[in-house]
Image (cartoon, rainbow, N blue to C red; front, side):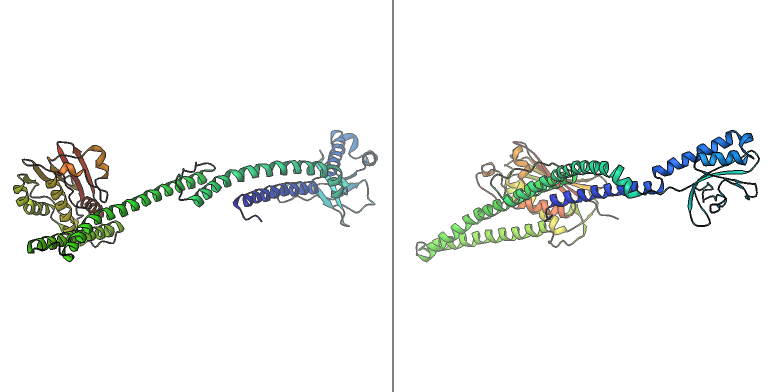
Length: 456
């Protein structure tokens, strides 16, 4: 019982409401004890007697008979003290003597006085024109608190409390439901996940519950994206492995069944098996490298790196290949380009991959330009080609694993497994930099890399 959030919220509200009503009832009880109706009526009567005397001091003060009559007529006790607080008149001397009224900590006359036998009196005091003090007193009336409650207050308190409690419990139920129902929807959605049609849970309820719902929807979206990426990854790996495995199996079969019966045929079969095995090996290494970079476990040998030197090396490495393809390859970077803090081998891998990629998609008589400059915070490196370009809708996916531009745009064949740009993207990010691309079909593609300068 009371194990669900809704029931506990409802119980919490009910306890708070009951406690509040209890505090109100106790406060009322204390007020009645300290200042009940009979006390106020008696005090008012004493002040009336006091005013009768102070309004006609010449006729009453000094006339003991008049003071005695007033005291008997109003069922009060009249006392007069001189300036030394000595009692000079008492309308009821036969009763236990009353002391001169004391003042409390706030320097105010106390409403109560105690006689020599411990009896409690209500009194009212005033100063007379001759300097004496007039005290009008009456025994404190006995108040039966239980009778006051049962006769005057019990019924309305019970009625009002019952109505207030009922309305409060209804309100508490509605509030707890507004909190619990959105959470129940989140729970129900989590139990049905994954589903073919998973709709987002509408955010409702208090702000914290809405934030939780939005976080849940965002988590589901990320999980769906991750699962789709994993499915695509498995499909792409299977597709990339299928072609070399088919070639290896086919030519191995030709060696086994004697179909390749000449030395030239056997050599050709062995060469194809060797090449396809190497292709699979390179793809396995690239996948492992990419997984380490994305998981943050790749080893980076950080040191001061000469970016211009890396770019110069890339140009020198691909110059023979560019000359053979009749493509102009040049470098435009200042000699005093500052160094950065990074892994030189990894950054060289990025520049090499970009230049190699540009050569594959740049036709004869084209050009590839490598440039670098600094703005005081970043070093900006650009690898621009005059190749066939990339369609705008394909640009956001260029850095995805296994994504390849339409092979027909590169002469009708696919180049690589589509992991180079993904690895380059991860390497740049591991250095705290960023990489972007812009392209126009028929006018070439430009890759832009921003790397932070080394801190001095």
